[in-house]
Length: 201
Image (cartoon, rainbow, N blue to C red; front, side, top):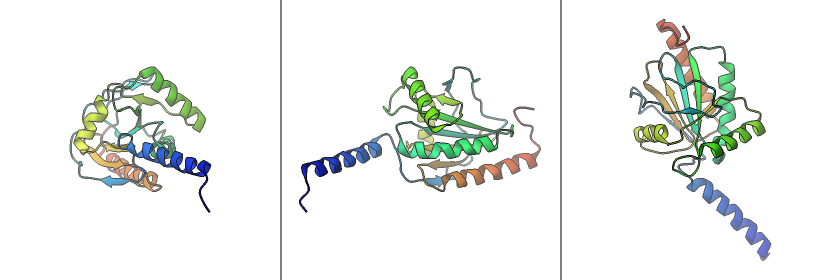
């Protein structure tokens, strides 16, 4: 059957959409994990609460899952609900915090108002309750990317209560939620066994 102009148009449109999603800054449809950064100090955070209310986040005294994502990134949109489920299960655990950093897709400094609106619209549409953060200048994300040697979305860093990086997940896969949950559970057991007081104590 000879392709009609309409079918050709649909094919090219779909191909363009896929190409654009993969050409955005490191937007990865597959995931891999790494412990190559284990033991390195996490760079300092320079984050702003998108809700304008939450206190500035700090590392140290608790286990931190730091996730860089974007509403424009399909793999990020698939991954985030799982991370929110994990955070909800640990809502009463003072030794854990999820810092989900919403990033724009332009590769440069983010427009805060636009980022705030787009993030809120996505969270409402997905029915997600989350205190999201912004990295308006890109300073924090770029500092972590330099440590990793690769700028990818989504990327999650598990950071110990001592401020040292424990593990990294870049990109998305259907198993990443389970992998992160298992790593968090193991780290929390180790933290409890150490007898170290939490940040809330």
